[in-house]
Image 1 (cartoon, helix red, strand yellow):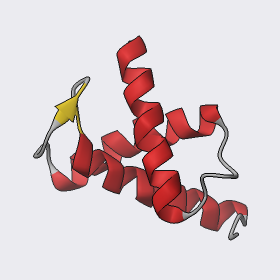
Image 2 (image 1 turned 90 degrees about the vertical axis):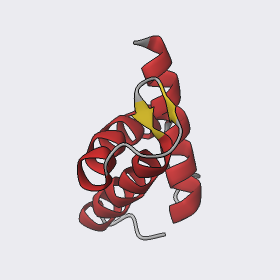
Image 3 (image 1 turned 30 degrees about the vertical axis):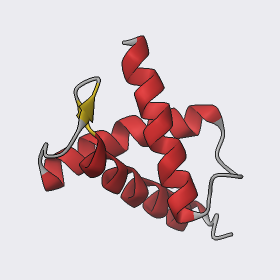
Image 4 (image 1 turned 90 degrees about the horizontal axis):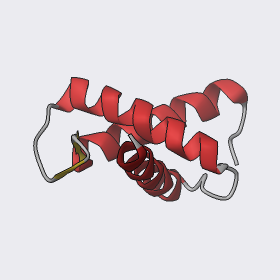
Length: 79
């Protein structure tokens, strides 16, 4: 479980850097975005590519980017 949280935080961090929202994201938001993004990405794109803690990294990062963008759109955090 701890390993999943660490990998989820890493995925959320990478997604924040890609969307240029990393400065506004706290550690909890990064972990949640990474874990939810992993679920969304693997549902949409499958489980291909390298994986850590049971999460395929490339689809998980893509899913986390989607989650961060959608949450930013609905909360009004555009910049």
